[in-house]
Amino acid sequence: MNTREQLLSLACIESMKRCREPSNARALWQLLNTLIPYGLVWALMCVTVNLSYWLTLPLAVLAAGLLVRIFIIFHDCVHGSFLKPRRGNEMVGFITGLLTFTPYFHWRWQHGIHHGTAGDLDRRGSGDVWTLTVREYLESSRWRRLVYRLARNPLVLFLLAPVFYFAFAQRLPSVAASRRERRSVWMTNAAIIMLVLVVARVLGWRNYLLIQSTVLVLAGAAGTWLFYVQHQFDGVYWERSAAWDSTTAALQGSSYYKLPIILRWFSGNIGFHHIHHLNPRIPNYYLRKCHNAGPVFRQVKPVTVLSSLKCLSFRLWDEQRKQLVGYPQRP
Image (cartoon, rainbow, N blue to C red; front, side):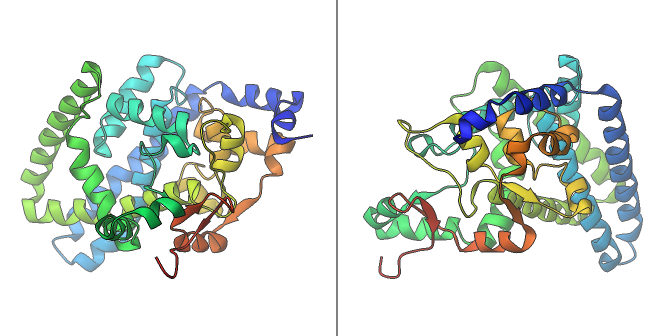
C-alpha cells in the first residue's frame, strides 16, 4: 500500500476530522497563557534595562520564545483554525500580527501560495527558502552564485534576513496583492507606528530599540530555524509539477520536528508540520493529538534536535539523486 492509499484509510480520515474543529475555550486559554506572560516579561525588561542590559537579556530570550508562540497563534488565525468565528480569527490575527510586525490579510495571501506550492520545483519562490538545483547553480553566473551563497549563509539566513523581513520587507505590499491585502499592510503599519511611539515615549527611544531589537533578532532566528527545518531536511520531497502530489508533499515534504516538551510549547506544536500541511484547518493545540491518533502519521520519520543540525549542510537540490546536498567541490 503506497503513502496516498495509507493516508486515505478510514482511521486517518476520522482522526483528522476529530481534530479539525476549533475550541474557543482552548484558544482563549492559549491567548491568556501567552499574551499575559509576554506583557509581564516586557514590563520586567522595561525595569531592568535601566539597571543593566545583562539583566534584560535573559528576559529577552523568554520574550522571544513567547513571541514565536504568538506568531503561531497568528498563523492559526490566518488559516481560520484558531477560533470558530471568522471575525474572531481576523481580530486576534490583527492583534498578534501587530505584535509580530506582520500584516494579517497580506501574509494570509502569501502563505496560501506557500501551502499550494511546497515541494514543487517548478513553483518555487513564494514563502520558501531560496533553493537552487545543482544544475541551476552550476549554470549560474559567478555573481548569482555569490549572492546565493550569501543568502544561504547561516549568519544572513537566521539573523539578518529575519530582521529585514519582519522590520522592513513587510512594510510594503506586493505589487500583485489585492486592494484588501495592500490595505492590511498600511493599517498594520499605522498601528505599529502608534504602538512604537507610545512605548518609546514611556521607555525612551534608546531603551525601546534595545529591547525590541534584541527580542526581534532572537525570535526571528528561532522562527526562521523552525521554518527552515520544516522544509529543508534529510529525505525531503521535491518534484517537478508534472509529478508533484499534494499529499506526498505534505507527508514527506514537511518535517515532523520532534522537540522537547518545553520547545514544543513555545513553538505551538508547529513541529508537527506534516500534519499541518496535510490539513491546515487543524488548530495548533490539536496537532499532537492528531499525530498520535493516526497510524500513518506515526510512521513518519522524525527529525530530532540533534539530527536537525545536519540541515545546516544542505545548500542545493540534486534532481538526479532526489536529495538535498552541499555545494559542489569544483563549481
